[in-house]
Image (cartoon, rainbow over all chains, first blue to last red; front, side):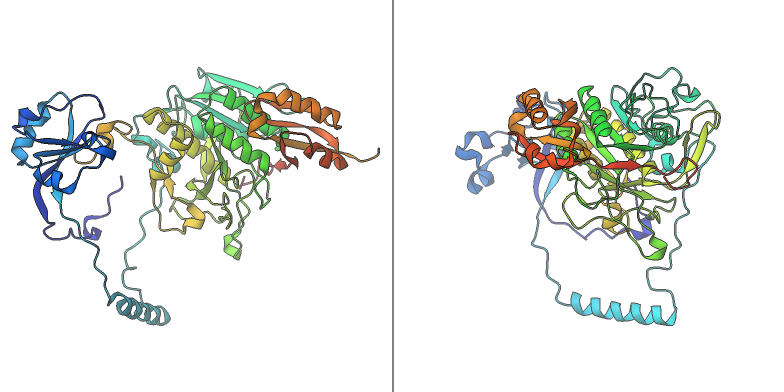
Amino acid sequence: MIDPPAAARPPRSPGAQTTGRQVVVFADAADEPVDWSAAGISDVADSRDFSSGRVPAQAMRDAGATVFARLGIAVVAAGPDQVAALRGARRPVLSVSPELVHHVLPEDPSAYVRGYRDGVTDLAARLAGAPVPGEETPLPPPFADTAAATWGIQAVQATTSPFTGQGVRVAVLDTGLDLQHPDFVGRTVTAESFVTGVDSAQDGHGHGTHCTGTACGPRVPPAGPRYGVASDAEVFVGKVLSDEGSGDDGGILAGIDWAVANGCAVISMSLGADVAEAHPPYSAAGRRALEQGSLIVAAAGNNADRENGEFGFVGAPANSVEILAVGALDPRLTTAWFSARSLPVPGGEVDVAAPGVDVLSAWPMPERYNTISGTSMATPHVAGLAALWAEATGRRGYELWATLTQASRRLTEPSVDVGSGLVLAPQEGAGTARGRSRGA
Amino acid sequence: MGSPLSRFSVTVDDGHLAELDSVASALRDSGMEVERVLGALGVITGQAPADARPSLLAVPGVTSVDEQLRVSLPPPDSPVQ
């Protein structure tokens, strides 16, 4: 993913001990037998041949190869050349690595004393106004919009992703979409209104068009930089907020129900109420949506005022355990001043973060584009990225959730503000066994 | 009579998901004007007198009766949304 500068990389521990045996990782093909004789190896111990699947230590020492069938891994007493003969075999080999000797990590009794010393040094330096050791390195330059792409699209690495959300349905539940917007001409858009007394999902506010643009806008807009993540996703626009920007549970839950029934893998909700308790209907809706393969992504909320020492809290529906809460980052990848902090209760966490300051996206004509800020703008970035991961891996529901947090770039910001960090787009090779295997 | 109408979301337990319609009619019998029966979510929304909450909660299969939250976005020209 993101490599640190070479100078900052910790030195590899000198001379990792090896056993002389090789660890072979096979591709996922459970029933395909391995032709050990091709490598001149006999005496194979297979975990399936032992009661309770446990290979005794003595058998492992004696065998030419020990196969852990459930893991698709074998430990082989042979040289690398010999094992290389397996590469041409019917069951593909993903990797061959020397078996390492592992040790209990050593305790360091001097660490406490050194920590104390460093603390005193740091305090003295701060009091004296001198630079603190290790903090002299200048900050990396902030992201910036270019002619090709907005800063947010660059930061989440959508620009280099080969995935587009093709074949994935994404629902955006908001104030609707400008259905005649030139950037969405030719796209498959299914639109429905859940606002009482309003028949069309046409957006008379702007917020919904902006969020839909970020989640699903085109790869190459006819004018201006790229601002959308999942450019080939099938768009489901549910108008659950009026043109005045308001709505209640009845319409929002109806929109979620519609999106789940239509098989939307991702449901983006840039909306919320400033209540600190999880709201039971949203928890039930989130859980049942996940069970049916739909992941709900919601804005953490904008109720912080960090410059004045107020950190806010994650509101409903994002504070339900079963709903992924998204915080907002600025172009330096620090927490946006308005972005809500985690609540100390289950579900009240900010789960991930995404670009949410000075975000350019679509706006109802004639303006066409607008640049605004909010956790509302961060949320559809994550929804679009979820669609890319859904396409790349085929994962849905809880698995897709885990994939997003796993694939987030960790930040130095507090986890109460950004959770697992900045969600990133899948790159070439993501989602295949070969791509996931290091050293293949 | 006289209690003002409130908007409620009624959450149905896992054991009654297959019988949402009969839960909905039991809610009607308990004074709720049912607006939507959400089959994929197991949630029923509608209006009822504010003081009808205990009797709605007593309907078999109902795990939670919650007054609906209202969401409001800032106006379109607000820099933070």
